[in-house]
Length: 98
Image 1 (tube, rainbow, N blue to C red):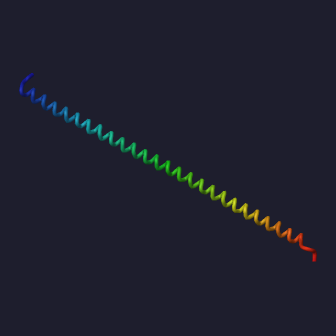
Image 2 (cartoon, rainbow, N blue to C red):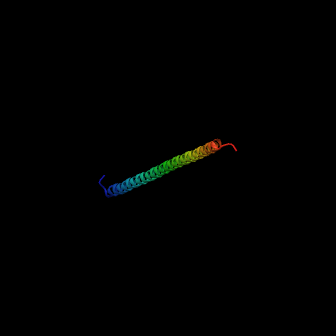
């Protein structure tokens, strides 16, 4: 078994084996990097989705607040108009008949 041909065959097998191992390490690294890239893309999409949802909620809250402010302003105008009507009624009531 210690012939020159056997040593050469074993050497060749060792080189191929090391190359194969290196190839598997390389493939494993590529797979890892691909998965990490996919994970990062997924996280970015989730973050963007959450930010969009938050912005939509903020916009809805702002719209509700504006609607409440408009209702309050309308209510104040109605109260002011009713107060003016009452003031004018009082003036007419207090006025001596002509």
